[in-house]
Length: 475
Ligand SMILES: *[C@@H]1O[C@H](CO)[C@@H](O)[C@H](O)[C@H]1NC(C)=O
Ligand SMILES: *[C@@H]1O[C@H](CO)[C@@H](O)[C@H](O)[C@H]1NC(C)=O
Ligand SMILES: *[C@@H]1O[C@H](CO)[C@@H](O)[C@H](O)[C@H]1NC(C)=O
Ligand SMILES: *[C@@H]1O[C@H](CO)[C@@H](O)[C@H](O)[C@H]1NC(C)=O
Ligand SMILES: *[C@@H]1O[C@H](CO)[C@@H](O)[C@H](O)[C@H]1NC(C)=O
Ligand SMILES: *[C@@H]1O[C@H](CO)[C@@H](O)[C@H](O)[C@H]1NC(C)=O
Ligand SMILES: *[C@@H]1O[C@H](CO)[C@@H](O)[C@H](O)[C@H]1NC(C)=O
Image (tube, rainbow, N blue to C red; front, side, top):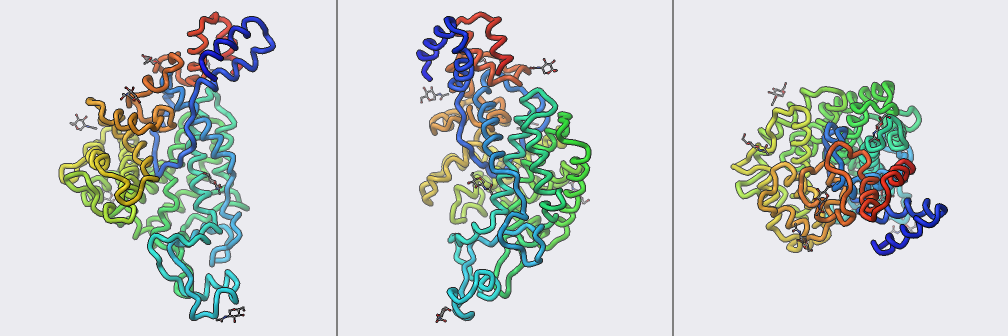
């Protein structure tokens, strides 16, 4: 709806009460942009910041997008590892499973593929590695996709729950249901191990690979979501659910710390090592082992990080990959997540000042901003840098405006993205979303940011305050 048609409708509103329902529902929606859902690699919005809810006027677009994303992801749930059409080699339907993406069957020494049933082929044919070529039959098993959607559903529904100003809402009910179904329920729950993650097939396979540990990186988001509900006293996150989830996570932590796959992932020097810490530190925060989370993330910055970043901010181990723009961004997202977790767990820590050859996390972004994604044909990966830039600008500041300039020039509506909520105080919100004149302030009133923006438009058009109050109540 254009502003002029809004004025037109509002003049009708003054005339007729029957039209009012249509109008006050449609105006705030038309005034708010929401970004299409994007599944970002990893993140950890600080639960205390989310609960403080500093989401006034200029965050109205980000608030609306967050609620949209919460609903969008919830529509795919609940999820369970017991839904897949194939059972892991253990024969236990509660075992998580995914197949190694670049492995292809070679049945030349085992009859032929037309003579073999798929399940015979998976066991008897040799599997060969074809780098970068994803075997499409990987899609047969959707445990990875399901966990990825689950982790976004938990994060955005937990944030949406705090926006409701109620101790129970459909959003927190979603989180409780999704966590219970995936992890805890006796019929549908997942065993706390990744014995069959990114497994190889064939006579020498049938076991998970250490690379499969990356499959559950969404635990960083899940940790943020659970802490948000726990710390805000949400009544849908019950003591029973909390205790059961802590027990589940303790068993899985044990697997991550003692299994060969977990140990190899944890000692990896590249993005696998960074993102292993995201996952394990997130789990430690869930089980209230704050000292353990601090130790892990501090150790990351004092050791692994120092081997990852060159003086100019490049990441040599990611630069040599087939898709370096993607892998550099992926690892930076992991660094940012580790820094956010450490800052949350120990506010006196200084991870943003951690340096490798003189280079901080900021230096890695500054370097990446100078590289061209089209060099390796990665135009489709360009959007991966936006949330990373926004995070860096929010922490290190943007005195010469170069980060805002980059984001603005890209055309990405970053101030309407969900991430803008926790990438405060990055600038830009008022410039790109204040077309409605941005009612409300950036103060703690923020629970009703979306409403405030609609109200801003109405106020601008001169409607009486008393009427506006009744609109707000009914929304
Ligand atoms: C946007 O709104 C905020 C208040 O929410 C205000 O402080 C700021 O000046 C506005 N910016 C523009 C460009 O109108
Ligand atoms: C492959 O299997 C089909 C169906 O059983 C059979 O007709 C065909 O002869 C086999 N080909 C080879 C090369 O084994
Ligand atoms: C996960 O979300 C994507 C859309 O982003 C959807 O296409 C897919 O079906 C979902 N998968 C599951 C298992 O929820
Ligand atoms: C939130 O709820 C409390 C208690 O119901 C109420 O006093 C307060 O005014 C509400 N705040 C907002 C911003 O709606
Ligand atoms: C982390 O814990 C290990 C084992 O207890 C200890 O040796 C190490 O010094 C700790 N590291 C940090 C950074 O606290
Ligand atoms: C880095 O350290 C300096 C000096 O202690 C401090 O002033 C600055 O705020 C720190 N930067 C960040 C991003 O923490
Ligand atoms: C953003 O881009 C628009 C044009 O697309 C320009 O008018 C505006 O000044 C830019 N804002 C900033 C902060 O760079």
